[in-house]
Amino acid sequence: MAMKVEHEMHQRRKGRNIGVFLLLFGLIGIVFGLTVVKVLGLSDIRQLERFDHVARPQLEPGALEAAEERAAERAATAPQNEEASN
Amino acid sequence: MTDATNHTQTQDAQMGDYFALMKPRVMQLVVFTALVGLLVAPVGVNPFVGFVAILCIAVGAGASGALNMWWDADIDAVMKRTVNRPIPSGAVQPGEALGIGLALSFFAVILLFLATNALAAGLLAFTIFFYAVIYSMWLKRSTPQNIVIGGAAGAFPPMIGWAVATGGISIESVLMFALIFMWTPPHFWALALFVKSDYGDANVPMLTETHGRKATRNHILGYCVPLVVVALWLGFTSVGGPFYLAVAVALNLWFLKGCYDIWTRTDADSDADNHAVEKHTFKVSLYYLFGHFTALLIEALLRAYGLTAWAGW
Image (cartoon, rainbow over all chains, first blue to last red; front, side):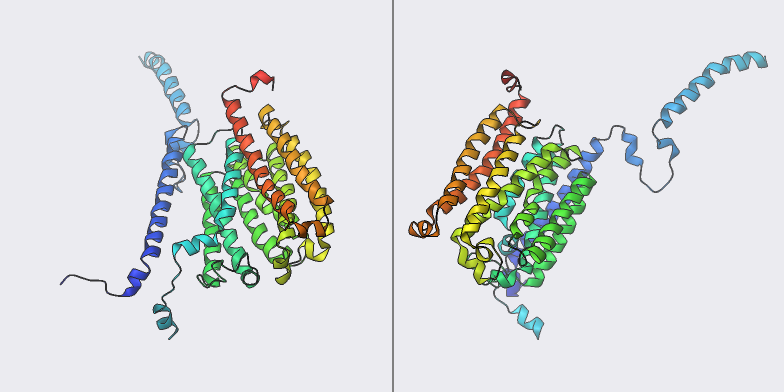
């Protein structure tokens, strides 16, 4: 047997219910839209991983650049170390 | 039994009744002035963020309107102009208006903070507090200067719009605030001169009731003079320009003439022509504010397309 709404209250409050639905749907749309705009507006997409309540030193500004510099230094000094060991 | 009574109620409030709680006509002015404040700012805003910011300002203004209607339900029921508002007409319960006002205030401020910045959200929160508490609960029934100080609540929107874009306060936003702030008294007192009996019936101490109509006419002209100074001063800031100044000069001459005419009239003159000059000046005051902010917007467009350079501005 199909479920049927019989109470007149549903008809009476139809306009309000549709209004509340549209308002809540609109709120979801606003929060989603703001999220998209804020994420696309980030200067560095790695910032998306910030604010997760866990310390992430690698995400600090300049961390990647510093790591790349250290890697370059190691690469530059590696041949000298190899020669010294030979 | 109370629940059963409520369930069989045939006159439920509809969305339109709740919307009317938010004073949509006042919201139009708030939205327009806030939008101008945002668009004339020297810093661009993402269109979606701008849309959300204006929506938050509108909802915040509407929420303060709902709180005002909740508090003023007793006097709204007495005045002809307000007797059909949702609470005195019985469409909305006072508790519903309070709940809607508080909830929407909270949502609007928090969302504006998340979307833009703390200053804009703080200004919106202060505006709601100012209108609902300082004006509605305190000043409105206690002093004939109620609308002078209370007018600040209506003057904040362009400042909030500017803060949304720039994150700060500057002379331009303060002058836009001052323009609405100084415009409010002559605008409302012109109205009070031809709906005088309403405020008296509700025991609201409007200037016309406490100090008489002659004093009100003096005050209208007295506030109009500094209003002219503020309006023209705005033309010499970064948001002004030759177009704005030309419009401002014309509008200020028009409004100043209306205020001067009100000042020179006696009550007998006013009664004889059914307050024609007062009604006309009230209408001019609406064009006045709309005209100034439209001129600011057009000036910003002209500046964006480099069309004010010819004037050496």
